Image (cartoon, rainbow, N blue to C red; front, top):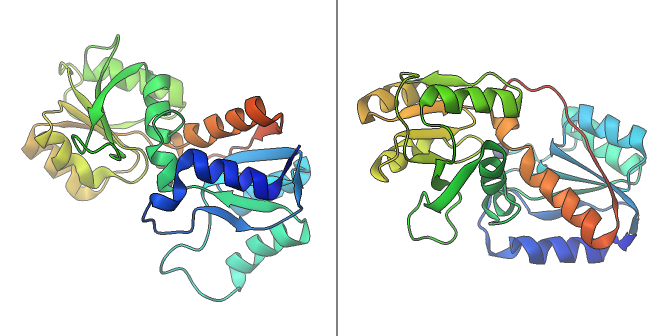
Length: 252
Ligand SMILES: [Zn+2]
């Protein structure tokens, strides 16, 4: 068990969350009960996940996609009211870490994705920037686009969308979880044969073809499951907080 304020302090310090310019507040977003015995982690604080958290009797929910995004409605009505009232009525805290969790070099979404897909990290996508969120590296075992695609399908349990010839030999991979398809030119500049993100736009297809870089859209949800999971395990190992992971189907 850990006091909520201490839990937040430990996570803020671990993720260095104060130093990020982000589109949402990082850290404690909704304050619930003062002691945390049991925590749930999930990708997004959707109503489905909130309902699961209530049923599981957790003290706090820790997510990658929380609330209070820039340009979000300023009133507590409709969907936003229902979500927040679920937390408040059940006295459950909401903690959210967005960019700090993408970027962390041991527990972040991008290093965790590499670990799960058996890739070696060699550099940041934004070369030389220690804060680069996207990464560059190579597959330890897979040699072709087809082999890499197969592993992604198997490990992430979701069929990826692939632009490129499956027989293409892949030496250098660039990746950035979530909706980072816009960095494909940066990956091409870094000499990558393949760039991977979660989502895809119409123009990503043209960019991939014209830049000569293969592209895989591996799922925004699917690529961002692992940072928050690693964080939950870290809390369990270091503070003895009971951790459960909550998931839901999301094809994007
Ligand atoms: Zn995301």
